[in-house]
Length: 452
Image (cartoon, rainbow, N blue to C red; front, side):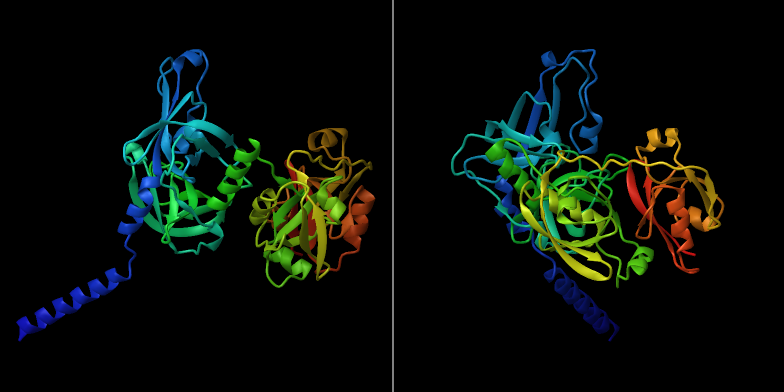
């Protein structure tokens, strides 16, 4: 009897394992289908062209999985991955894989080798477009990262640590990640294992379509630690098409400084939930100013696409060509206002200038003190209107992130040019009304909400 029960349990467990495994995707056919279009890239920088007394860049290569630099006065060799996007030999990869190379060699899965020509490169997105001479080459189908779902299975193919055409898999962990100061790439985060040499290789969905280019990892050791980032294929193809057509990449510019909307700011503005990009600066003469966008507006939709956070706006704006007319929806005074903007070109915009003057000091009685801008304050901050924070006396103000040296430019909807404006704005507040400040803090503007 016991033997029968044991055998029955083993059978149930076996059937359960079969059922579970049947729900997992089979990557076998996917790897066979897509593998031939993934290439190994070796980039060589000849030592003769590198003076021995000049330091060679190497930190970024290691960070983005390239092979570390060789000692000076030897050829510098780096490696990575790429994939063919056209049957006549166009190849996408990361810029850092081939940066500074004199010779680029591409190897296919069938062991054929080709010398590659650099068609163009874009530092902002870390994308490079290569060309090899060939016909009827295997190519990958291009999908869209917009259709990716969190938790969706994806597969990577590349050359980690020089092991060519290695296949790894995982799921999409998050979308729209902003890394460091990079604004124009909303990275895909996944748990697909990638290491040095995977750079430039494809991230592929279960339909066999490329949805991203594997670009970097966060690591304390230099190896994979469960967090990988990929450039969305939509961004990469936009760059590739411009490089092939014009040799350069152009990006649209709206001309605003932006913050995220936190709960306190949402409550103040009358928004149901915190969302959108809160405008904290409008550049003089910019597309935004001409469209009627104002400081304090919350951009909730741009060119038909919802804006959920501050981070989601720059990639969408940058993906539109300069001089294009776009629709912009802003939340203002409790209502949605629809505007039309004609975009400028990135780097063609000037920040707003200001002018102003005043005197004395005010101890506001609200947890901090302010004074007029000194000549030193004006030189330090670039601001000539506003008041400068000189002392913070309450913890609530400190926790709200107001700092000594910040320049207060606006309270609520009132612009602050001097101490008189500041005093009037404070006096006009209700006893329990939050103090909503627009301040110049460091290199940019930010909104700060102090509950009272």
